Length: 420
Image (cartoon, rainbow, N blue to C red):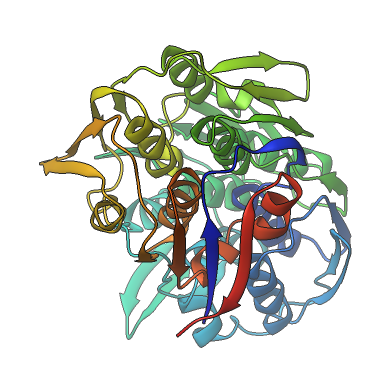
């Protein structure tokens, strides 16, 4: 397994182009199963998760061609229910449940895997299918759902930690081909849900209200092929913005959507980071004086859980005490012990991390536990004095396209080497 070796202390400077959003790309790719026509997706990021999803589509009988950020998919006929071993390895693979139900009125999907960041049950996904009239059971590692015909209805998708994003995506895709009207209450409001609805509507679906807590879907008999451009990755954008901030650098982000980052940018500004925002650009300039701020992760449009770990690194640079409260995933502080190896003073009290900032970090050998923890450790390595080795970076390759190349272009002293 590869590792990233970082010699820290260099302020980042220059421009970085933001890639397409992983969390939008996977449901969009799954949605191509809803039609026998060809679909084209552009601005697709070159990530291991995207490659996995392409293999899943092929295992379902679809023809798939990928070339430089563009994928062409044609699922003339769906053959079986896919490769169990492929599907179980990636959390995002659960988003094939909705398209299979919409297209076939039946699905058999292996229980998905992914990062170990706490319980991520799929009960709301199953509830959504039941609300459309499907009979659902879980046995032998599979979810098996079946209906004579999906029938539109009302479904409440709010959970203990807020709405389910992929559960909302599955409902959108299945209900698009259901008979009658479907109302989703407490729907996820993430930009990735809006992007999926835009693509489905281009395919002929009738979806209103995406991006709000209530979505209406009027089922149609058939969906057609369509072309679509994936939105920029807001989590990647936030990560590079924070990379500029923690290194006291001057970094410009191109091809991003600042409106998708309102909560993150608000907290960065509160912390003293100087930010210039354009229509599709962000410029991060050195802070005159960093300040500690308190953060609580929430469903969109609150502060995203996927930026919690990276923001913690900025708080380690900020004098004072900050409290970071995680309300989405109960095990998303696994990076704390690794940051402690670098000299971080962080204590965990229930769902909150108490961060004592303003003390210098020093390079160390650290181990990545999940995708966003990996990004945080890379940021900490760039902010630290000395050499940091971030091991198990296969996690980071799931969600960041060419992260070491992009950081080198900004002046970071970073290289990829074979792991021990």
